[in-house]
Structure formats: C-alpha cells, structure tokens
Length: 150
Image (cartoon, rainbow, N blue to C red; front, side, top):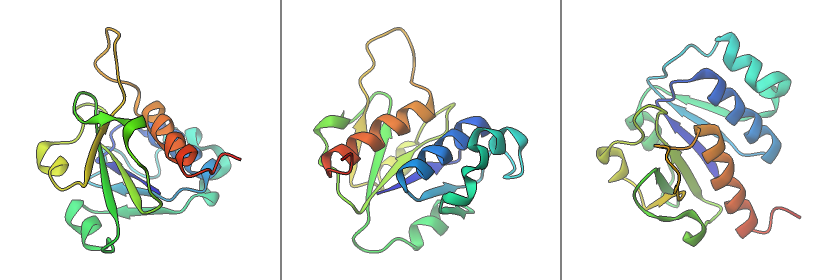
C-alpha cells in the first residue's frame, strides 16, 4: 500500500503522516500543489528525525502522479461522508490510499478517477477527523487485513 496526500494544506499533519509512514514502511506520495514548502519547520518537527526513513515522492499535480501509476495500482479514495465503511473494503498490496486536503477533501473530479471510495464513520458533532488520524485508522486496517501487524 501507499499513502497519497492530494494538495495537503497543514504541515504538522503531513509531518505526522510521514512519521506514520516511517513506522509502517509505507511510501508517501505528496500531490501538489502543496499548501506549504517542504522546508517548513512545522513539517520537519512533526516528522521528527524519521524523514530519512520515509520514501517520499512529490508530484506537481494529479496528472503527473497518475501518469506514473502502473496498471495494477488501485486508487482507494476517501471521503468524510461517502463510500463504504473502511472496514468493509478489502485492502490489497497495490492500493494507493488517497486523502484530500484538510479544508475541503477530495473533489468529485478526483473521486471519479478511483477504483473504490471509503469513509470512516462519524456519528459525533464534527465535520471530519484530523487528516493524520484518518490516515492512521485506514492504513492500520489495511495492514491488519493483510496480516502485517504480527
């Protein structure tokens, strides 16, 4: 599996996700335009000294990213309100877990390019979960399903 952050906006979230990717040996794809510089001190601080342990690919835009995908890649799109519950999705090794920007999520144009659409149920009085938390929940479920948690 790989994580894809489409147009991320908040440096500490991206740094925390990079740390998660280091912990799980999961490649991280950052698809621009980014809402910050990769030299941002908050981004670096959130990722601590783990950046050297993360495979990070940076893409200028969606077209550049998608042009490099192999034919077996499955784009698993995420949404706060649409799609099947993430635990009902059958994760595979070739899944790219795609998360949208913190402030507006994935657009319908991007969602329509995916192979699956999943959501994390929210029953409280919030609009969405923190992006880093959502990535952790979905990634660890994928790892659980593929027996990687042993």
